Image (cartoon, rainbow, N blue to C red; front, side):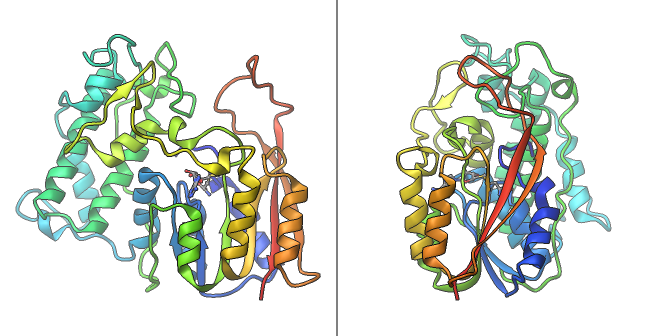
Length: 358
Ligand SMILES: C[S@@+](CC[C@H](N)C(=O)[O-])C[C@H]1O[C@@H](n2cnc3c(N)ncnc32)[C@H](O)[C@@H]1O
């Protein structure tokens, strides 16, 4: 999924960091999990991972990519769809063949919808908006009728969230749509089976909690991997559509406002994206956690100062164990330079900070 701070392309750097720093163990916590790319990787390295994020769509991705440990069998769907030797592929195929219907996403996030028409929210073509509605409703109905296990439910939801993102008419974030249709938006919505990590026997847990709350509740564990927001852009405002798809609209449809259709009561603002609060939040979290190792991803343009990171980690860690590794990479551009934001260069330095605690 296109996501600010997605570490998918930096996994080799994180792997190198784990090896160079001699980080081993069996339990890890990734409390800013986002797309779950790092937590998924840690699971492949043999860690039982506890993940969290404030966003509901992240919770679905965490569950699919980290909690699920057995290939879903979809036994409950036996009487409803033809399940062959690959039940996940069969379930996905069924969802891909549904007729579009006009429901919440169609009404609010495509130009043909009545509710969004005042602003002509061009996030999806009418065809794709209708397909998202049809797939979301089918997943909801199956789950409500008891045909899906939790694992199966979140695997299908993750597949839908990612498929919708591939055809979203945006430059990567949902804070704005593009006025003309982008080539990706004109492609038909197609769900793909998520790349699950199964058969490990590891017990992993997903949460939708504030990072500090999860860490405080955990007790001792081996590795705390921190990847907090780098800037003042609130994720809740940048990814409200995946959030609506994850939460659904079936009991109480969210009330939306403005040009982009932000939910009225969807305030999930984070102190980690506020200049005046992020350093305190960081210090509190590091001092509450009880890991043996702390590894933190951050970049050279982050709002927590390097002096603060170094001081807090050195104070918390074993003397002499503090380390800093860095790697340059090409910037993820979710939007262009503007009057208010001018990128310094196309290269950003990604940093891994490390300290051993025990
Ligand atoms: C840099 S991103 C993490 C990216 C992730 N490592 C990945 O590879 O996709 C930061 C994440 O922190 C989450 N976040 C922000 N404030 C939070 C909080 N107080 N508690 C938990 N998660 C939070 C955001 O929703 C976002 O997903």
